[in-house]
Amino acid sequence: MQNEPEKKLDRARLAATKWLPISAIGAAIPFVIGIIMRLSVEQVLVAAALTSTLVFSGLWMQSYGRERQYRSAA
Image 1 (cartoon, rainbow, N blue to C red):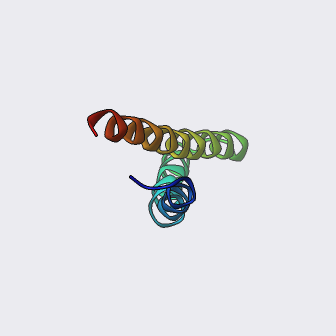
Image 2: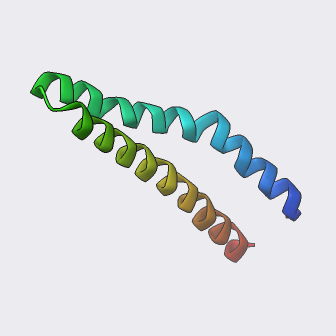
């Protein structure tokens, strides 16, 4: 079982290497759709920010659920 600082480092490493790029891709999708549909810049920025936040927080919460699943299996 990992100790607490190692868990935080692992979660921080995952955030920097995997979650942020996936979140950026999620934020790019509203930009593409906004250009195709000719939406206003404000709507596109809000949609991109919400999408990016939703993807990042979902991955973050998933990491806590995965940790709980591993702990209950051990």
